Length: 394
Ligand SMILES: *[C@@H]1O[C@H](CO)[C@@H](O)[C@H](O)[C@H]1NC(C)=O
Ligand SMILES: *[C@@H]1O[C@H](CO)[C@@H](O)[C@H](O)[C@H]1NC(C)=O
Ligand SMILES: *[C@@H]1O[C@H](CO)[C@@H](O)[C@H](O)[C@H]1NC(C)=O
Ligand SMILES: *[C@@H]1O[C@H](CO)[C@@H](O)[C@H](O)[C@H]1NC(C)=O
Image (tube, rainbow, N blue to C red; front, side, top):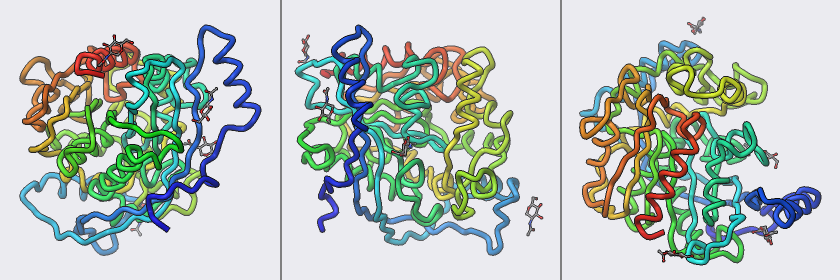
């Protein structure tokens, strides 16, 4: 079987009831919804992954040991680790949505969404499907749908309904980028979404997902026609420095829904730590959406944290336009959550990673932490990046 082949029996349509409801909403109400279908796509991808120095007998239940290992690996930019060819064979799950508004010259363009760590496809729906927190207020997909864009939202390998591979050897930037490359190839060949061939793919990332976009711009510069990179910056230093407050802990021992996962699958086990690291200043978000995010968090593979510098680096050949959105209080990419503004900010500096980009612009939502699509400023961020897309020919 070709790894690219779409297996129709694994394409899961909505239930009849939901489907009829969504048809009804589309035709009867002013406020419609994007028409989404769950998918399960089998694929195989191969890349050279790094072999990291995991100490013998590493105590995964010791958050200080885990944070220390991440800080050692990320802090030592000069060290080149050996690589080995690594293969992922499994299912990529997610949701494909047709827009509720038809705009002819956007029908062959698709937005591909890539979440950050401990988040799955639901991040892009405002944390819930069919409705997120507070309706569609925080749904990036819903906004894109109203602008006429089809959207393809995946669970990265190791989260949501996608296959959970080895969280250290397999779940790394290089292999996840190879998976994204396969998906883009399939979207353009008409084998990802039955009956749909897309000519241009817009990559929309958050945090680790943005780092994967950076990696795709480096490794496959012809894949993507525009990059929207949210919760992103130029330096790896703050990412590791402020990580310990989240108290990384084995997912398996943390909650029954993660039972059976190997110990390299981690969660953030401190509620104040997750708040500080990912959400920034109180008052910039609804407490209810923070609680939902903390209670429903997904996992992060230790290999993802260790391999960040495989993605966060200059993409010398990519010409696609880039738009960066990172809050002024982002504690992941700015030390002590103070990003500054203007040309010296990590947001502006991140444009240096795309020296050949047709254009690179940035937006710094004020008072906003790391969770760009979930803060009070989210609708402004949605509006800004779609205006950017229109300005560069979409
Ligand atoms: C919803 O999307 C599915 C799959 O893309 C398509 O077959 C169906 O016709 C769409 N329904 C409506 C009401 O547009
Ligand atoms: C691992 O670390 C935890 C937290 O420090 C500690 O409670 C536990 O005893 C350690 N386990 C082993 C086997 O050392
Ligand atoms: C996983 O699949 C189930 C069944 O289709 C669905 O209800 C659930 O929302 C999916 N999980 C995610 C994170 O999308
Ligand atoms: C797309 O179509 C709209 C009208 O529907 C037009 O205003 C816009 O300029 C077109 N964009 C491109 C890139 O052709």
